[in-house]
Length: 335
Image 1 (cartoon, rainbow, N blue to C red):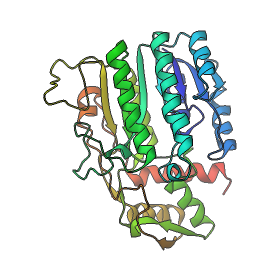
Image 2: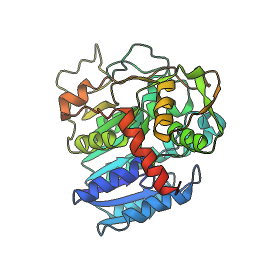
Image 3: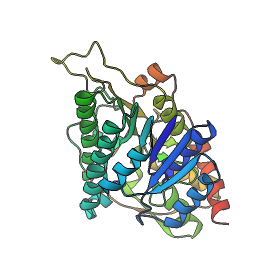
């Protein structure tokens, strides 16, 4: 494969590029290196990727239409994995414009590049946040998700709709992946595990939202990467059983498919914090707070379709994943 991975300097993008490179594929990694969080961390990830002969980095903003089109013209990409996005539920309330530029305008540029570039399969990151006000558990890709509660979630739902349109109009095979609370080594500094570990080591308070009763389907990075690589190798086709009288949101008469990638196991935030404390040998100073705007109290992934189609079920327990993260954190920051 000749693969374009967008968001290559990001948490998931870095790990995915490494996996593809180890498999022997040629990879072009696109990133704009924006300062939403530490650019040094992003550059350190890229430095590792640059050790591979068949990796090339392209510093381009997805919203740069000419730059994106030029990249597609100069490369015959067989597969595109779109992970670039402005992330974060709470930040979308503070800075909505960033989400429009990257998650909507940028994604439209990727779709156009794929359409004109003859790409054989577009895989794109969606999010568990699209489930919004849904309360039926576990969350299923066969349920409607028409009530997002953050702009971030709305842009991810929009990506699914935009991809389906291109799949239907132009026959572009598209697969959307709804990731559930990804964590692990080289993770994002704005996410709970990173924030909690840093604060506990520095003996500073941690903010515990929903009074610790929040439940999340925490999914270890290696499980996410295994799911993405398997899905990338399975080009979707039209579903011959799709019925327009009772439309299934997860498939179509077009070559289009949606999957959840989650651990299929919901964990209370308080237990997550306890696992961090056990690894660090230190207790957290907890500041209990109410549920934040845009957050949902619980996520839980139904992964039946992922198991059926690619034979994989994420299964790393948080105790294992947190231990690996903290080992990386201590080494990276020399703690």
